[in-house]
Image (tube, rainbow, N blue to C red; front, side, top):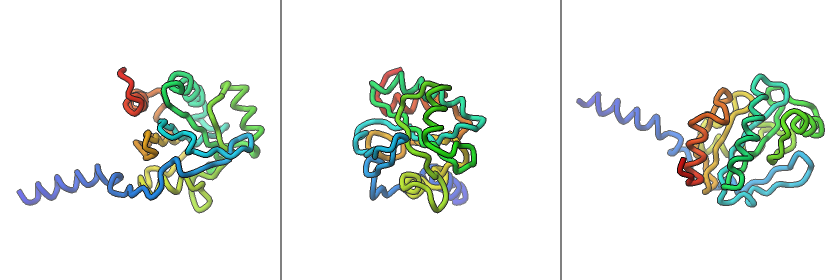
Length: 185
């Protein structure tokens, strides 16, 4: 019986480990980032919105996910979702300048959701928002590849993460977004 209790507690702790890590001295809204066109984006302007933060790349096998991200943006932006792209060359699959990335996104996917300048998303030079995500959600928040998704709730805290292979229009992402936005599907 004692072994069963220890086993059950271990399982519960495994599933709650991300919540235990999260002390949230800062929330998402406390940060800013440079936009792809050079202006500073203050995430405080996204307060009380759900944010799907995605590290992107132009030359990746997952690049077609841009299409689904744009569809999400069009469907849910008026209901309170911000899709936010962070072009990154952390995996050596991005253009070398912001102008090329912007042109690529416009020409191939007609992207009009907000995007940052090309930004490191992992390692020592990672942007503060990705270091914050790791600190508060654990290593699973660190992008392992392009099109890693971090869903931020209206309180500015991480709701969940989704690996690259999870499509933006997957049932689990849509359900989580609709729950945050309080949409009855």
